[in-house]
Image (cartoon, rainbow over all chains, first blue to last red; front, side, top):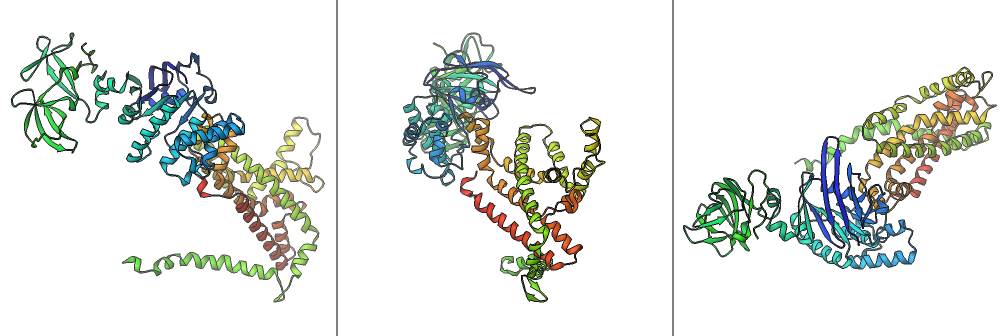
Length: 351
Length: 283
């Protein structure tokens, strides 16, 4: 239980700036994901919080006290590693007990905490076994139990599900959410998987090129990406970006005119989520040249171009579209994002 | 097609089997027979001759003492060196290369190197004299200075043979993912605890190999001892050499050879039993 303030953390590796003055505040009990592509600096930030790496400058405080310079063990945190790092030469029980043993906890407390964590993660039957006898998912449970057994102020997770197969990942995701909600631990979760971040987080910090591009709830980040990068990184298919001419503060789409935010120039970038469109009657709406129509069962995925620019949209499964067909799309003004074509930064959402 | 010709693998390994049989197993059987026979009849006479010899007890004691001192020191040093070099980023290969130079020197040459340091007119005396610590040449390698002689031989052996242990240990350390140590660190393990509770158990296979190899080699110590101590410091292989070369008694020499082999086998079995390697408990 703790709130964390990350203040202007910077990390240089030689001439390479891995983190460029990153700041982030995480509230008590909150689950925050650091989401970004590999090499964006998210793991470096996590390792600096953990104390496994030292920042070049900046400060991190937990509950108002700076932890910079403290060794990892004095930071009151626990960590779950990507490859589990469950000790192969210890039984599951001893693995879960490890942190408590290091704290010189008495045997009664060790037993109580191990049993509690084991029950939470459903690994009681495996307590006497060695990790190599367990599947990846089971080992990941052991790693989480080991972290929770010490009742950390902050739980750090570094891509904990990325080594699991797709089905197990989904199952563990749901389970993690349940377990962490029950434990109420402040959690920082590093992932490159946007669905994981969306599904688990209270808030997501999207990291790109050593910077945090946007912090917000999954819905905010999804619906109103702050930058072109965020829009294209989150969502499947990614957000469409269509460059459009602006005349007198408006953009003409089909028979309708959409007001664009003040301050935009001659052209503006329309950020369009593929599933926010509806099929328009013929000759109305935004024209899309469909190249491939893929019926996915739950929906119909269309790939093609809008105004000569690549686009992907989703229609209800009940629609039928032929490859090569030209169709019209109706847009929902409230669900559009307008971005500057130069900076790639979005204009504030209209009130 | 090829998998039907089941004789091909046998054909391919035949040369090695043949040469091993010719050059290893045949001499081994001969040696054993030589040791336990007398004039073509089974006999323990050679064993008796070996055991009542004045140097027998001393050579056993010396060989074991040397092994007991040299092997643990080498393992400890190799662990320290391996751990230190794993923290080094730049120049790691160069450091390892320098550390392994003694490996490239034959053991007799190594003995000569240390002889030039430790003999009466050697570098050590020159240094001590110039520092005013001794007033005249001091003998370190005679039967009157058994402790100095032992220390000199032990140091030379440690210098010569640590590299092979270190190479095995470094290979073992490289197998331990750094996440294990980081996890232990996060959960509050001190550097020493991380070493004893995480690193050491995880490099058991390397440790076992290094111990077996180094112990067997330590029981076979000869050239360095011969160069530094001559007959002032009898060891088992030295005795075998003396019986064969100077006494021209091949049978007693064979008895020594068999004894050394038995001791080595027992040591190997001991390590295999004591340092159990369970593949289930490794990364």
